[in-house]
Length: 282
Ligand code: HDC
Image 1 (cartoon, rainbow, N blue to C red):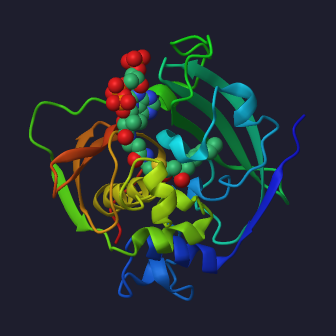
Image 2 (image 1 turned 90 degrees about the horizontal axis):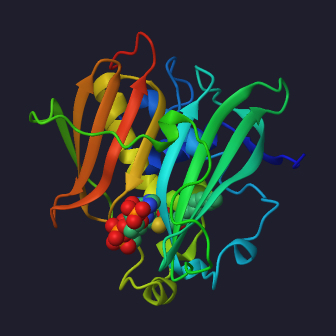
């Protein structure tokens, strides 16, 4: 069995995460550890697993792997314990789920279970899909082959009616510079030389940052959620404005996120299943 990778966090990591998604000094439950409702935004579950050591190497599973050509494609995240501990020692266990050959690109899917190191309880589960341009054509299956959790593969479809709630938020030009301190130090988000080779004139925003901003909109309007699934449908640049359109269907909030300045999609096919009894709190 694969060994777990340790990640310890404290209230400082929670505050940094919340701030990096645009929390304000007046959002005391998100930025002040002595507030009686101090808490992580629920999408914090995408943080502890991020730097997990994997027993596989990208070079061995796809053709011509280049980190500059890798983009985050989709993310599924489950919060398995509420309330989310505001500090914990965690261990994350990785699993390679699928390697798909799209011809010009490779798609790699991996799962990560994050446990409380002291109690052994599950805290979070993540499934991450990366899209690696130029790495296909290795003779693999063009379609998914692995059986996966239903929520992880769901492509939520927005209803025809106008959105029930819309939230717009301008990201900061420095958003990626701050977000990377949560653990994803991919140079694509900070180094113009690196992003240029990847095909982008300027560094781009982390997919997980756009996910977090949209998930914050879901949380503030509808309350905490058990899980969330998104597809990163288009690139976001730090400083652009994200518009999250949300539809409540039963216990699920279906959402999509657009870049206001360009009208292009950032997140599509997204949904979050609300925690039983969830209500908007902030
Ligand atoms: O959708 C395009 C795109 O540009 N998306 C935005 C990508 C992005 O900005 N991501 C966030 C920033 S990158 C990042 O944050 C990296 C981070 O630092 C590291 C993450 C590491 C995490 C985990 C570690 C383990 C693009 C380029 C992805 C696809 O566009 P096209 O090439 O035009 O594709 P298209 O012709 O529409 O479809 C081809 C086939 O691919 C499938 N597909 C499309 N978008 C996908 C996707 N699959 C997964 N994720 C996506 N986002 C399509 O369904 C299609 O498949 P099929 O032919 O079977 O229908």
